[in-house]
Image (cartoon, rainbow, N blue to C red; front, side, top):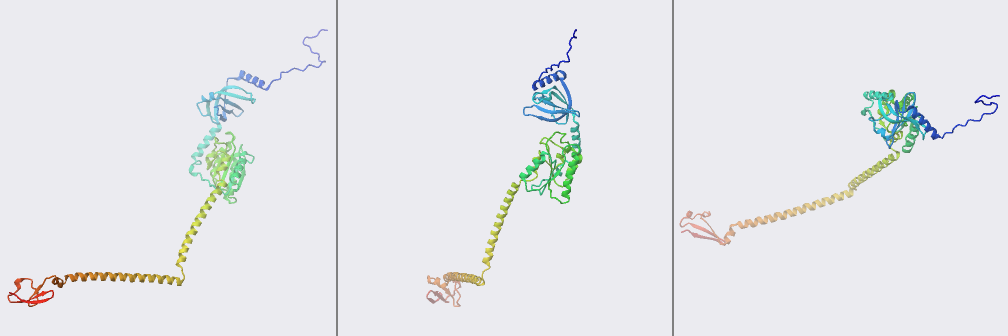
Length: 413
């Protein structure tokens, strides 16, 4: 009986097939080679998301559209050739090599060139709304309110399961454990998030308006994420709700490089949720230090006031003496005044006596007798008139010759 070629006896069990066992790295490399042979070079169009640039100069981001996403690495050499600043939301066209990043087993496009083909849908919507609200005055600096450093209460709007809530509470417990916090939980991502955030804010506004809770500042916070993750905070109705807040609003949404419409409308923008918590109130230790300084200044001022009033009281006490003592003081003053008067009179009398003696001496010197004592004489006629002119004397007239020691009659020749 002849047998057919390539026949197999089914009555005997077949020997197991021997398959090759791949190492992980070798399989990744083989897949990469297959992609290289089939697709590369490749040109891909999509929207930039999660763009970062490392200190080395290499850039990493995700290229996506409505159906999928692809990780992209652009090394420094290619990044230096870019003629525009890459931002999330931009529509770009990337030329590169498709492969597998073996260390992580991820599909990756290594970009060799990239150009803009128009802004992404989200970024376009963001810029349109930003321009509209800016024209409406919602971003004006003159409507921004100054924060109080010592709020009576703090409102917080965020997700209860978010790291931002934990970060905020940790910062507040460390800095101002004495200030009450009112939490309004809400979704912070997804289709329903804008409506819920708006309602959470409005619930705090109602508490403030009704006077149920003393809230002087509201924190609107969320952790970091892509433009899509933070999109709930780019809602027009939410923006107007923030602008209507009865108290200042601090936004702490995403990281320092993230910006949202809510950031522009809020009274203060903080780079992170933790920073928002640090901005909303002065730390309790600083408040205690300020209080101690004020207490010291008040004590010093009070002490100086007491000292001045004590000194004035001493003056009044000295004035309010016993009548007997007061009479004695007045008598002493009267005695002193009397002594001064008497001394003054004596002095005055002595001065006048001296002056009188001087006048007497001067008058004595002018007396005619003083002249006669010096050997002079004067002549009078029979009528007793002083003779000054010899022509006035008649011959034989009897004249009186007045000398120091008497009068001598003589006949004129």
